[in-house]
Image (cartoon, rainbow, N blue to C red; front, side, top):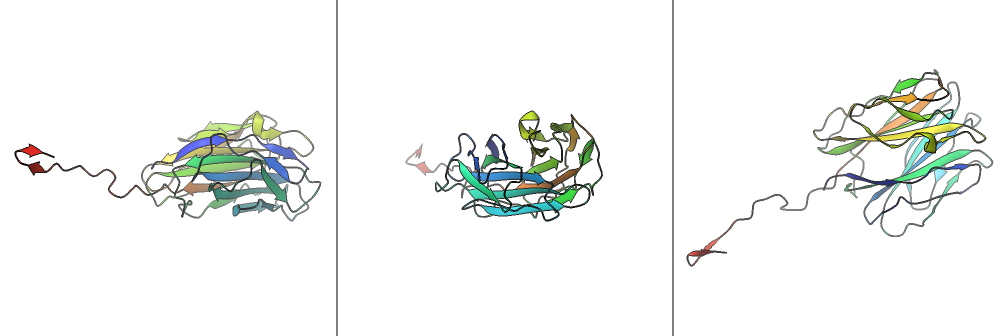
Length: 240
């Protein structure tokens, strides 16, 4: 079963806690639900995000230049989810944002193909950024690129390198209180190997700092016997 993008929800941002984050439209059983959480300027300790039933996959935090945290939580959809999802942080009165995204066709027992690759640009302000690559080990894995900046930069790609943006632009950029934005894109890797990351671009208010993570989703195993030819058997001069 091939991995397919299902939907992405709107980013919820502000200093309220918890945030009420809507499940992606059209979600169904066995989808992988991913929560993308971002925050900046947090006194050198970073922020931790939690939601009942969801597991933290990554928490990338940097202190060089501006403090920034980007985190991924996930859950295989089993029907126990609340909608909206109550996503909490470990700091009160600190502005942060979160959005949900869903994929179908992901292996429900081993959704992640390889270890994620965390990266940042070491506090250097730059309009564009190419994060470190990820290498898949399973055919037809889906590579994911999750990027964040510390201003309302309205992200896009200056070089897509085969990626399709699923969350970026003005809808995932904020100028309220503390400014930040996120970008999230995908690329199907048919043959296992180096995925090739996109070059992210700040289309407004550049140059600012970057942080991000590369992931890869593993496809669900094909059903037993799928794709095998059906054999006809001779019987009494005819065919069954």
